[in-house]
Every structure is written in C-alpha cells, then in structure tokens.
Amino acid sequence: MIQRRRLFLQATHAAALTAVIGVLGALTATPAAAQQVIKLTAAAGHPPVFLWVKLTDEVLIPEVDKRLAAAGGKYKIEWTKAWGGTLLKLGSESKGVADGVADLAIVSTIFEAPKFPLQNISYFTPFGTDDVGLVSKTVAELQHTVPAMGDAWTKNGLVYLGGMALDTYHVWSKFPIAKLEDLQGKKLSAPGPSANWVRGTGAVAVAGSLNTYYEDIKSGVSDGALVFTTGAWGAKLHEVAPYVTKVNFGAMFAGGVAMSKSRFDKLPPEVQKAFQEAGEVWMETYAKTQNAAVGALLQKMVDAGAKVSDLSDAERKRWADSLGPVAKAWAADAQGRGLPAGDVLNAYMATLAKAGTKLPRDWSK
Image (cartoon, rainbow, N blue to C red; front, side, top):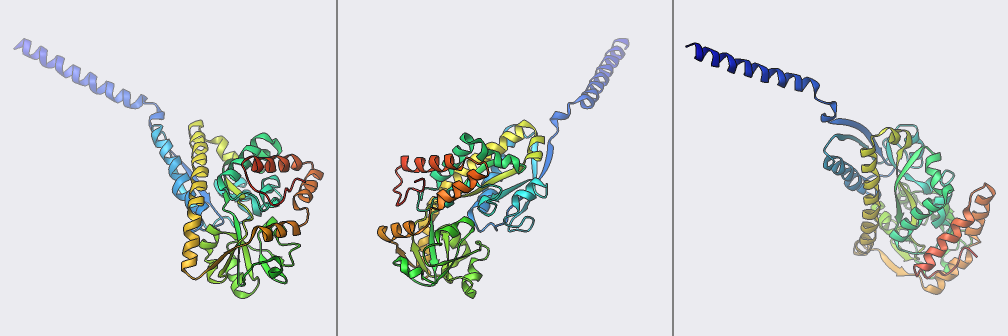
C-alpha cells in the first residue's frame, strides 16, 4: 500500500514538473517565432489594363510574398493596392512615394524628366532598337556605371527595384501615312520628350498620355498619337485612329518600380532582399511578356478593322534626318547643368550598335 502511494506521488510530481516546464517554455519563447506583419501600399498612375501595372500586381507582389514565405514566414506583407491614379496621379508618383503617401509605385520617368533627365536617353535617340530587354538592361547598366544617373533615384528619396521599356513606338492616326509629306499640318499626341520626334516634320506635337489619347483623338484635339502597340491596345486607340503606321521609333525606357527609401531602409534585410529579387523577376518577366504580346495584339487590332502598313526604310531615314540634333541638344543642356549626358549618350549608342541595331542616324554625331 505504501509502495503504491509512493509511486502515485512520484507520477504526480513528474506530471506537475512537466506542466511547469511547459508554462515556462511558453513564457520564455522568443518573439522571433511570431510572424511580423508589415503593412505596405503599392500604387500606380495607370490602371491595371496596362502591362506594367498588371505585372506589378500579378508578378512582383506575389514574388515578394513567395520569397518571404520560403524564408520561413517570419515576415508577411499586408498589401493595399491603389492602381489607376486612385492614390497617386500620373507624373506625381515619385513625390508621393518619397512623401510616404505610398510605399511602392511605378515611377514614369518619361513624365518626370526634370527629376530623371538621364533616364530619358532613349527618348532623345529615336529610331533605335525594338528590343525591350536590350533597352531595359542597357539603362540598368548605365545606372550602375554612371553614378549621376543611378543617384537620381536616391536624390528623390527612392530605391530602384527594376526598370521597364515600352515596345517600339509607331503612329496610330485617322489618316494614312506613306511619306513624310503626309504629316503636314497634322496634330499628333506625343508624350514628354517624344514631341521631339514630330518637330521638323510639318506636324504639330500635342501633349498627352495614354489616359487621354482616346478622347483627344475622338474629339479632334489631335489627329493621332505616337504610341507603342501594347499601350495602344490597352487604350483601344484603333477604334478612333484606325491607321497604324509602323515607323519603329524604337523601344523606350519609361520608368520603373521604386520604393520609398526611408521605408525600405527600415525593413529587415531579409525583406529588402525579397524586394530586390522580386524587382529583377518583374523586369525580366515584363520584357518577355511585352515582346511576346506585340504581334498578337496588333493582329487583334487588324481583326477589329485597323489598317497596318510599314513605313519604308527610305522614308524612315527621311523622318530621322528631318529632325534637329535632338540628342546633342539634350546632352548639351544636361551637361550645362553638371550632368554627364555626353557619356550616357555615347555609351547608349555604342551599346545599340554593338548589339547589331541598324540605325538610320547616329545621334552621338
């Protein structure tokens, strides 16, 4: 009887000790085991019908989430998405992110040229390559090799994650274009520095963006627009400008995904790494998707009644030669403000030539 009581007491003491150890373990568990939720807002001035916004939503954000989960799930992003100018208007994205209105956004450097003058090199060297990937990688490399170019992001309170180039520009118009003289007296919507592609041709450049082209052409503010295929499809320009003249002004670097530097710097290194890697994936996926979509979308426009024609090499050269010294003037102006634009221009043109691009005009000369 005594033996049984002793065994009972020993078992009871052991169970109690185990319970105490369990409680102490729970009380002393490290906070690192708990998942930390980080709230971030992503924004864009354009709606998700356009590829760069669509892939930010469908590629970049999931890639960040996937990497954090694969690293053990210590951190999780709680996203708020504000596309289509609902939070940041087109052209104000860099300031909105720097001011903390959003944490991440697509910054359209084409519409923020004063802040990103060197990033607009492709727009001052028209009739270049139609290779989206080549343009994106060339500008990305220049941002590494030319400090003043890469520093533009930092000076504006941003961290660059990845860039985007738009597929080669053509002309969507209400009228057919077979020769340079067909442009006489016409009004063409042209974004930012692409207005330089019109001056000297007899046509007049009209300011605008993808958000305004359709109504501008429909209402007669302009007779057409200089635009790229994927953007023209998203804006349904073939409905109001059925003549598509393949001029091939070249693919253009138009901006990139950027984060607030102050916000980025406060993120744990593991989260920073996830964003940087996701930005690379976004850039590569965007270039491949953009290139692959061009032919299919152009065919859809043809099926819907668009009339597509190629501008001859001779007329393309005439167009290029009709323009003033666009790149040299840009470089001289930027050099006057202490920027190494001449180096950027020479390096950009040399890279295109090395890649085998047939240029009707060498803008560095």
